[in-house]
Amino acid sequence: MTEPQTPQTPRIPTIDLRPWLDGDARARTAIARTVDEALQTAGFLLVTGHGVDPALRDGIREAARAFFALPAEVKQPYAAKVGGRGWLGPGAEANGYSEGTQTPPDLKESLTFATHEPFDDPAVNAEWYAPNVWPAEVPGLQALCEEYLDRMAELEKRLLSLLGEALGLEPDFFSRHMDHPTYGFNVNWYPGTEVVGEPQPGQFRIGPHTDFGTVTILDRQAGKGGLQVWTDDGGWEDAPFDPAAFTINIGDLMARWTGDRWRSGRHRVLPPPADTPAEELISLVYFGECTPGTVVESVPAPVGRVAYEAVDSHTYLRAKLDSITVD
Image (cartoon, rainbow, N blue to C red; front, side, top):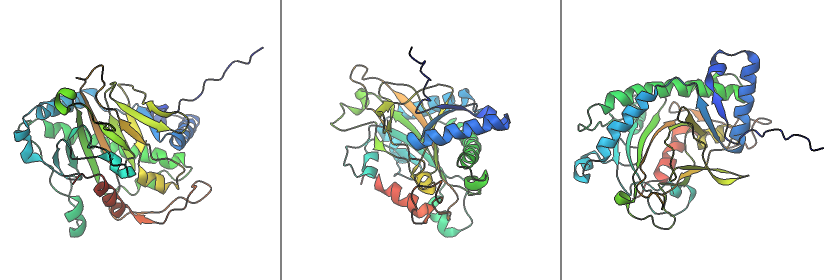
C-alpha cells in the first residue's frame, strides 16, 4: 500500500503577517521557520496581511500610466540616471550587466524616486539625498507616492524584525540600522512591442540579476511577460502571483550580512510575449537599504555559511548601482 504523499512546502511560500504581529509563540515560531527555509532556497516570499490599501497601489499606477503615455519630448526634461530622481527612459538600464552579462538594454521605462529626508552629514547628503522630481503633468502622483512610501517604510521595519528572529537573533538585529535609511523606489512601465519594438536576442524587460540592498518589496501585475525567479531545483520559474500579496526578495547586502545563509533572489522580467505583444504591466518596486555608514559583517557560523569581509553598506551599494548604468 502506497503511503500518502505529504504536500511539499512551496519554494516561494505565502506568509500572512497578521499572526506574526498578533499570534501566539507557536504561530510566530512556525512563520520564522518558513521564512528561513524559503530564503535559503529561492530568496523570495509572498506576504499578505500587510495592511496596504489596494486603492493606493491602483492610484499610483493610474497616475504613472498617464505620465508614461506622454510624448518623449515632454518626458525628457525629467530624464535621470540610475540612482537619480526622475524618468529613466528607454535604454537607460541593463540589469544583466550586474552579473557580467553584456545584454541589450532593458525594455522598460521607470519613474524613479529615492530618500526624501536630507542627512546631517554634508558628504552623505551630497551623495544620497536630492529632492525628488515630481512631474507637473501628473499632479496627483506625489501625494500618492509619499503615502505609499510611508507604508513601505513601516512594512520594511516589520519585515526586518521578522528576519532577525528567523535567524534566531534579536528582533532588532537588522532594524536597529534603520534610524535614517536610504531607499529607492521605481514605478516600472513594461509596454508592449508597439512601443519598444521586437525584442533583440537576449533582451528582457529586466535582465537577470539580483537586487543590491536588504529587502525589496514588489507590488506586481500578472502577465506572460512577467516575473521569473531562479531556484537551484527548478531553474527559471514563473513567480507565483496573488493580487493581495507583496512579493518580497532579499538583496545582495542582506545575503552578505547573513553569511550566504540566505540567497539574494535572482530574477528577471520576460519580454513582451509573442502571442500577446501588446501586453502592458506596471510594477511598484521599493528597494530597502539601511542607514549610511552601517558596517555589514557576516553573521558567524553556525548561522552564517561564509565569512565575508566587513563592508560599508553604501560604498557597496554605490558600486552596484554604477554597474548597471548604460553609458
